Image (cartoon, rainbow, N blue to C red; front, side):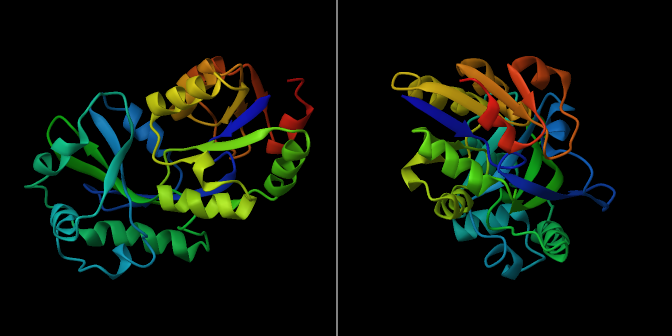
Length: 262
């Protein structure tokens, strides 16, 4: 029995990401949130587990992010970091942080203006410096499913593969994706960081021969753990050398995995 585990952003969906530099106030769309985290040894990518298009965009803009999370009991997770950090300590760490909800709302509007769906991607969050408790960036990502994905998933199913998704993206967004590509919601693992992805692949290997398909540094451990690690470059972002090194195969389009002898 065989299984394929897909990452989501940049792998199954074409991702558009708006990132606001809090110090400069500028919004960029040409940088990777994972790369920004890797640029500093103490950074972490935090994902808010609530809908950007209905909840965050309608929140009071002048309140601090800490106030918004605390008062509304907004769940959150650390999606990516090189550090082991207890997320339960995060709220206390940012209690004096002045970054506002409006800084997240700016990135939501930037994504919506590009006509990307913020409900099938990671949603909104921020990049936090765990050393000093400062929010360096706010972020929102939206996506469009790559056109080849339904055909690829359908063909894999016909070949008897079991399909899973393990991603650092917001859990609810992945449930919508699961419905779209017609896989069981229990086959979806949301807000999975690097170590969690590796654990998922390792556990699945007890039952299946596993192929992992990903596109970024967040997938390295899972690519290495899988029986076959596949790096896809369809997102058209140049992957770091360490990601290329972790993969057994590199493909330019998700449909190319159908040609892999596995």
